[in-house]
Image (cartoon, rainbow, N blue to C red; front, side):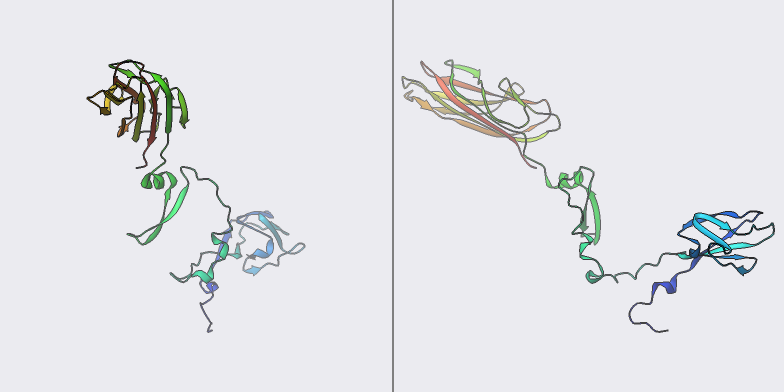
Length: 280
């Protein structure tokens, strides 16, 4: 028989047959659940039995019940009419856009967040195939977030002349990880990486006699970076050096800020510092 389009899949399907070990009983257990007795054809000693209540047999789920008990030596088997023995797949590359429903992806439950072990579908160009990868692996390949972020200040800090001293940053404007305490930033657990650090200093006094100001960034108790402004004539009332750097930090590393001023009297400073983790 000729067909328009693909040959019906039933042309390739066969049906499962189950043979029973009989005894003097009316009750048997099917290997596969059925809706009712019409889903199977029961044959005893070569004779097809009539299904239905009050007829030769009934069936529900995996329970097969005969009207009359079989005897030893009977031959009984069932054919599962509603169950194909094999699954027939469509030919390779035969399914296109028009054969799939518009809701195959859209219309499904929308996710508002993604867990670390959730998978994402991507196309591997080298293998010309769709593959999946976890969210954790996907994010590690494209970078992360630039947190923690720290921004702290101190206005009108008192300074000692000709002395390198730690700056007291007592005004926390931003501290996303609660990692700044006692004028010190400590890298939180799990936040290893490269950090951008900036220190801004404005020193001033009343007698116009400042000649040197240094801003210093300390890592783990030692100078890591510094910037300075010098006036040999010592006739400045204010100087504004700044220093910034990029530094690799791991958990428990800490950053502090220092200043050195050489002048005469009434020295003070306005200071601010910024720290944030870089996206790599």
